[in-house]
Length: 87
Image (tube, rainbow, N blue to C red):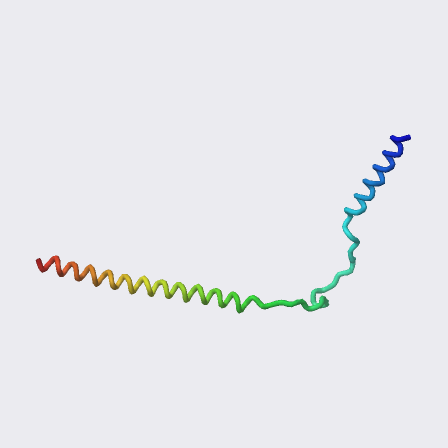
């Protein structure tokens, strides 16, 4: 009798677990995106443009900084060559 009662309880518990794991029944109707309610959206284009602009400005600034430093090093090397040649 205990085995039968245990078996019935086990089957009912497993059946409840399986029933709870089933996905909810959904609509079978197709709903076009234009019929959906509007959601809060922010267009990505301004952010993408701002990111590209920032990267290009940073790149140009870095190249300008390197160019200026290279000019200073070239002047220092030319000055050093003149000093060595004058000895």
